[in-house]
Length: 78
Image (cartoon, rainbow, N blue to C red; front, side, top):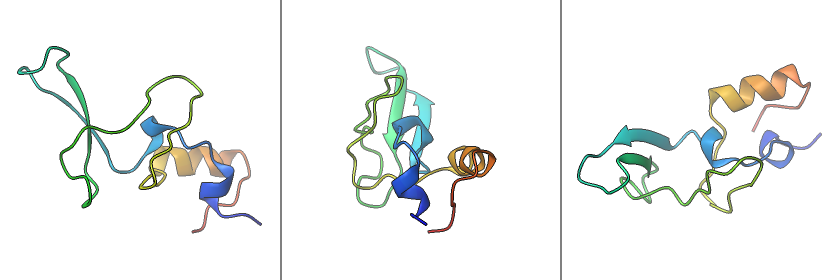
């Protein structure tokens, strides 16, 4: 069976490293930041479009994505 990352769609919104916040100093105050040690605090590469997968090599599924995979009967171990 394939690992979870090979079976789940790699949506930016489902990344464990995504941190959403509001930054009033920006033109668009809704900030999507990466909390991974490599990119800590930088903007997430996204995209945040429905059904468009991210190409970020740091993507890892969050708890919601893992739960959805389990409900769909997908393998969820790493």
